[in-house]
Image (cartoon, rainbow, N blue to C red):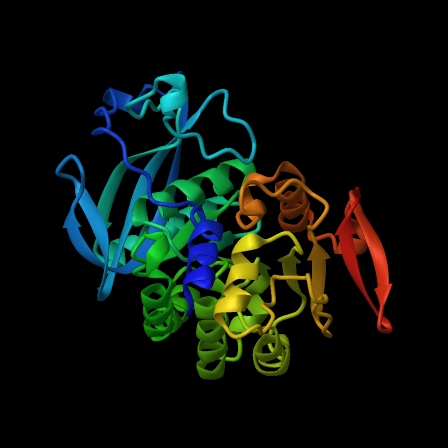
Length: 364
């Protein structure tokens, strides 16, 4: 790619999906996690990242490929947390260390044997209303730590009643590693497919929500197709597939991916925006071909797909992580997951007629 495109791309994606943060070593949480000062959210994880030592000597994961490992994380959510915020230390506020009472902090990561992992998930599922679970797949430029923090924030903000799980593939967690991340994302597809097959076999969840952001949509879409080919009954337990700002070629998504997903799962929700600078940059990198999550050149309209245009909501610096940091969109996802209501019955959305089909926009 030429220098101008390269510079634009790096600028646009600097905070795609939450860039890796660097702080001083985090304080050890007080006994019992001092839950009066902050809430603690537990999330389960599966990852094919390499195992390494964390910043305080605890379990950590890098950006290289490895076998799948399982475990759980504990993440703090401040009591004054604002919906959609992923609170972190700020030098502008003279904050140089993570404080669980103020910030979303990964407090603890524990590895688990596969059998223990699925056993605890079954317990969470059984205790939930409707036997629910969700699996979240993050996007490009995301560290394991930030994937855990984002997963916990979504769990908390969505008020999710069930087992929250995130799958963390080996993103390098660096803005300049877009190409490498793309290669690792492709490599992870088979691992995620195997994990999804095992998850549906062993979790006993009856309502599963699959959520993917950005480049993670490439992995989830292909992995889901593969898993459903091996076991067509999987689609019967997928309550919803949510693609948020998918960094997928729009034509490939329309002609190859969605028809195969829609044959087993319906409906599917797509959040997209014309103000997504990261996807605009990705479009340039990919020779000008539109991305499924970018509506600047048109909205993806397909049978079995509910497309929601988020162009008129506040979408932050690069307009790419709005799915989890915008209050309106989180509220829309909340009602989608909590009630199952389709777009036509969710407050805040306006129907738009186009090409004998409809899509939805957030009200201005």
